[in-house]
Length: 225
Image (cartoon, rainbow, N blue to C red; front, side, top):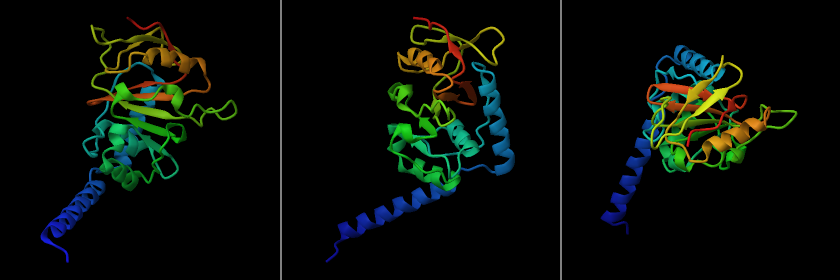
């Protein structure tokens, strides 16, 4: 016999499933072609001019764990042929995977090295850059692009903020970038990532209303202590 407790549990599970389905069906671009093109242009400008911070109107409302800016990047770049890895913070929220699958068709993979795009909501705990697909000598484009959500992209320093000067293609002299927060060893990893060029990963940093790019072609100067 099914008692009241079982009935309540079943009803609760059904309600949760409906809520997840509703979340997956909502929050995409309102004007998909126009919005996708606008976000894509901003992303390309950020990667073409490393270290510069660009305004990014999110135009998307993904589940809360995935930032609106990262969600907009996903909608602009992902499709059914782009495997995606989500960090532990995002993987713990099933609505995020549901939303990505419904709105982009992208398959979710379990290992960082299997991903063409990786989304990081908890940068202090993200895997080393070397954990992701690096590409090969013949196919350097077969690598991962990381989309890392941080609190700020201000090019400033402080007691708890480390930044680095950048040189390379798209930079006239030097550029300054200080995403926060990041793991203490991040800039060392970024220098090693550049040393692997043309292999290596590319990075997009998102913050509220903003985005910046750090492609593998960018040389990382010694970060501040």
